[in-house]
Amino acid sequence: MSDKYGITQDGIDAAMQVKESYRSGEPICVPGDPARILLPEHLINIDLDLTQFDDPLPLALMATRDPESPMALAAATRLSPQAEHQKLVAGVCGLVGEKTRHPLVKRSIELICENDFSPKAIAFVRTRTSQFIVETRRQYAAALKAILRALLDGDMVPSDFVTQFIELTEAGNLQSDVRQKLVTSLLLSENVRPGIKFLMLEHFNSFPTPTRQGIIQAVAQAPESRHIDVLKEELRWIVSHEKQKRQTEKLAAKRHSRTPAKGIH
Image (cartoon, rainbow, N blue to C red; front, side, top):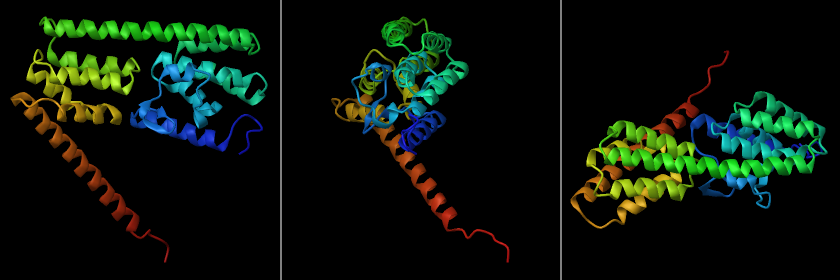
């Protein structure tokens, strides 16, 4: 499909990729860099080339379906300028405003549409979006500090801490290296009980791949000690178990593909 109407085949493919990421729970990564999770700051930066993710459809999908308001709002802000001279994209923007799960996205789209996609209105929304992203991240960082203090003071049970920790790091759209450093600091800390560390490792596969890789590397390079050795062994078991699981799934898929289709004889 040509880009005559502002939508390309690459954009359609990218939208399918975004849809699959939401379905599987895997993070959306910066195109060409699978180690970097796509963040609201990337979307709000108009000087950053996001290749196929700059097309209207993947941006519309993020603005509509992303579970976090900062990401959805940033996607809507990046989408809006493309609608100024494209009726089809303007229609897509209007649909985003109707279908999005986020009231802030809805209000921002309404404001931009009411002003006929004027650069002034779009710039206003972009400024407000940038402020919202910064404030939201500050709130998540404060919440993380609060639950850690509650855990160390004995005011929060370990299972609640681990659950809230994972939810906050996911909702805060933290970069992989930041999330990895937070988890690693907990795993390597002598002030955190071993039981809490093992609870964290029970959720290891819920972390994005770049985060998991960083945690494994950091633990592997940690100074030798009894509790570090136990963590290393636990991580080896998790990685080995996951590898066996993937191999089993591949073999099952291969057998299925070789099974002759039943036809009419």
